[in-house]
Amino acid sequence: MDAPEADGQDADARVQQRVEALVAARTAKLTAELSLERDARTRAEQLRAGVARHASRLELLTQLILDFSTIRSLSELLELAAFAVDQLFPAAARSSVALLEDGGARMRLYQVVGDDEVLPAGSLVSVPKDMSQLDGAARVRLGAGVRPSSVEMQALAVAGLRDFITAPLQSKGRVIGTLNIGAATSDAFSDDDVDLLAHVGVAMAVNIEFARVVERLDGAISSQHKTNLALARELRERERAQQVARERERQLAEQHAELLAMSTPLLPIGEAVLVLPLVGVLSRERTTRLAEVAPA
Image: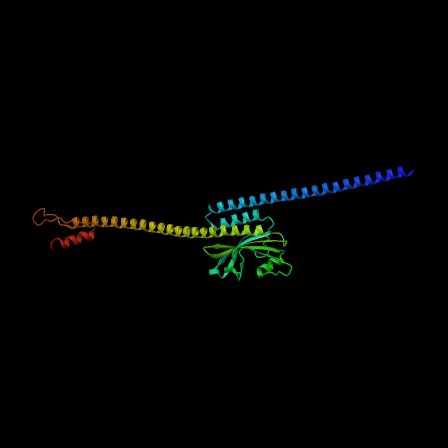
């Protein structure tokens, strides 16, 4: 092989290498762009899905608030709230409502949904020390040095719960209870869950107070109705008694008048003859007596 031919082959090889390098670079660039595009599309889809979920949850919250306004009893309101929380927070393994009792000395659990082997509905629980300072929902994630803040949370932690959100139920500037959810993993909830539970708590508190007022009014109305019925019965009995008394007085008056009429001597029929009325049977004894009395 002569020198010119060898030089030509080297040049072709170098050209081929440059072409392959350009193709590889272009391919890598296109691959990176496609990867970025896929990542962007994935993020966009995730964002759209997140927005759709958020919109759906807000729609559920709006419907919940509307449904709250149609309920007049506390038990029905708590049942509706439990159903709504289950729909709004699918990651929650347990939810409950705690309401203050005995002037705020303790709280009682209502409407426990999920794991109720520990602290079932009806249980009395302690009032958090910062109860009066609660302002918005608070989240506690156990682990990494974070310990349960109460005996009740410790019991739930032993039962397997790790992520907790507590929303205050505030009405007229005072806390009347808490709305609580818990999950089995420490990353089950998000900041959106905290905000959403706070909104649910606000809607619940207003309607809980309204339901309590309605129940008190219903109780007062029912008591007044029973009192009115008792008074009506007493009035009817009194009217019947008065009617019986009037009838008895009438009968006595008639009998008295009849006796007076019967006991009044008739005018003399003739000289030394006088007719006297007799009431009852004219027996032999009475005849003898009349015979004795008549000459007198």
